[in-house]
Length: 291
Length: 320
Image (cartoon, rainbow over all chains, first blue to last red; front, side, top):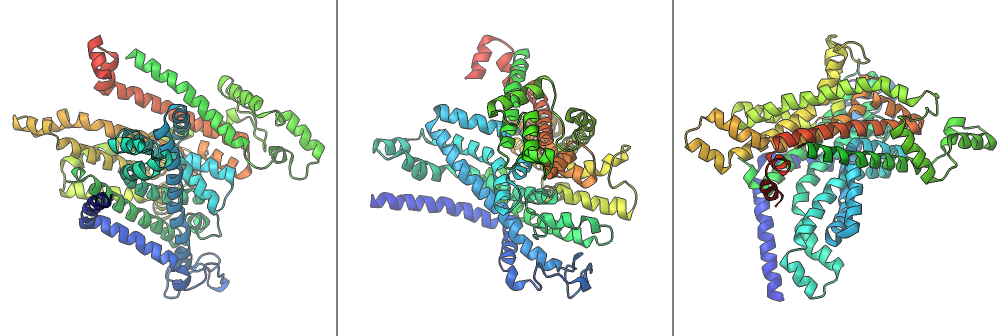
């Protein structure tokens, strides 16, 4: 048993290490993840580093363009845009990450049950997911947030639901395939419990195809979250979410264009970083695709 | 072939019905009382009761679902708006052409410009053109479409004054919305087309064809491209879903009174029948176009073709 563990450990690390080595050599991917982490750190540190409070109203200095005192300018209430962008990162970034996290949790549950047990449970789950998938994802997010109401947690749920069907489908296919493999048979013959087989033996081997789609999923969800707030659902003004900031400053676009340009650039940089990283992960997992 | 098309059309019916059931069920569990929306906030309990009676809100779930489905799919009747009392199906018919014009043009742009660009980039891998296209495409997939829309308005309407910024009218009103809506899809089609081409170009039969002296051009267009088309087509149909859903956002930015804007106004005023109607219409339009794409797929995919055409032996082989 002891030796087996050792062998397993060696094999596992070496596989993961080759993946990491390939990923580390990929300059755009490293650049992307550095951008993303910088934004995350800035968002976490926002109370410390932002020059003003994000709700601090100062009518004497409203609608000022970028200057030394206000790096990104101020909005119609004289709030400092840089501080709002930094705080807004907390909402925009965590919406993306938490929604995909929730979607993954739900799809692990659905996909593993579906793929492992098969039968009518499988058919039922898959048909329901088929229906959800036949509606464009942002539409589902829109109805869900119309039904659930606005707010942080509700928005996460609304954004997670449309992602579930894709992930659950991939996981189900993996579970179907892996449950036929010898080591699962061996585990069954040792009267290992079904739950343990699913979670300990199959799931760790079923992950790989999900990594790429989850990374790209965070990027898409950041975009969807900002779109949702932009049309007035999801997170709402005066909360400094980037999409909500954009929608609040639309009316001032003609004379104060920096108010719409800056939040948009931050959304774009975030998504850009994630996409570059996602491309790199895909190439590292499947080097055949690169060059 | 007819059999495949028939089968595919038959499969379309339960999907649409299920979408109807799903939407109705979601809206059924909305917290809050629709009768209050209709009668106003300070209506008395008797008035509310009367409204509930009139709209059939006090009937059990299954009866209401049955009524809803038969009204929607057999009579094309979505009821009336809670707020204005206008018949929803009339309003939808007025708005649908605008959304369709915008959506179809946008989608065609994503395919007709994105795919050739991607194929060209894949063929000329690592040359300047390829690098440039992929660099732009990376920005394209990362840009929020509504923000691009705002930037276009800022430049072309507010600064240069070339194009109208919002509303509807002549074709010039559709130019900016189409560009804003299609840029992301174009970029993702180009990226997909490029990687599909690269994967095919590396395969053995392409090397063989080149080795036996077939010209580079012929190998690319006759051997590689047809095989790269399937993954490209599936991305293009995913792009369609984005266009259908994205119509809400683009119509909001450019103030186009289509289905998307109708949906959004209804969401904000809690006008439930309109929400149901708009989502169902958008989902049905999406399903119909997917159906057409699937049928087109069958014409170019020899695997599906051989399943339905040809000898029994060939069919058996294709099944296996």
